Image (cartoon, rainbow, N blue to C red; front, side):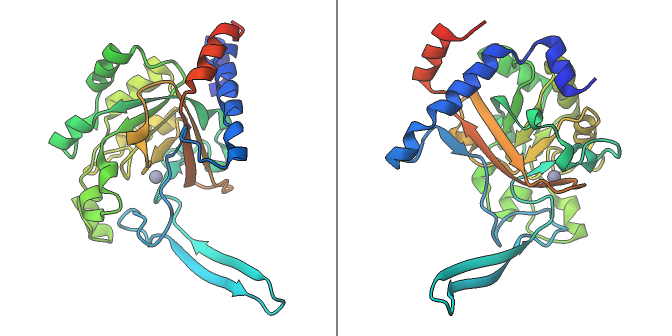
Length: 288
Ligand SMILES: [Zn+2]
């Protein structure tokens, strides 16, 4: 069964939820004219530059400067080229990354990339153990405080490692490069049992975190990637700005570059925080 059919069958993404998101998006309109930045939009994406963190085996992001200045005809003109691995900086892993007959990045349904989201903060555990994997117990502890993770949510995991960006040694556990550096990686991730639990028990839409990989640094079998992608759940890696998010009530929009046949790619991810005024209007008038 497809994700959308599954969602329809379970009626987990009903009219009310769509209405709340639309109200939230429409409410963003007013600030553009006033010229003020909208504090309700959180950028979850790091800029791509020569400091952007990539897997130790990858070259990194390269911007080849083209024209940048006033041309003969008298007007200013800028146009460059870039070169990048699919997996580096803030990016998406498409299910095909670890599963041969699952969607490529251009094939990921858009309803996997836009939706209501929660933030599960495991930064205390990760401060004690840099190889910590967010566990079923961590998610259950969060649910005891905030209620069940709503079905078909985008689940974001805050490990706190975002505070190290772009210090490679602190963020990855090593600043060495090349294949031999992979064995020296240390950073938190998501436990494969918890991935399976989120898929089976909470039917998650997508998952993301503030480290270089959804499997923790020491992983050799990449079990979490394999469990997620078998279920066609995409993963967002190297997310920025998770410290600015509330635990619940926000919307994530995470749109990757649409590379045909790609296994992943650079991602522009944002979060739209709840608008208290719009929410109380919606509560009064939203159709049930
Ligand atoms: Zn990746």
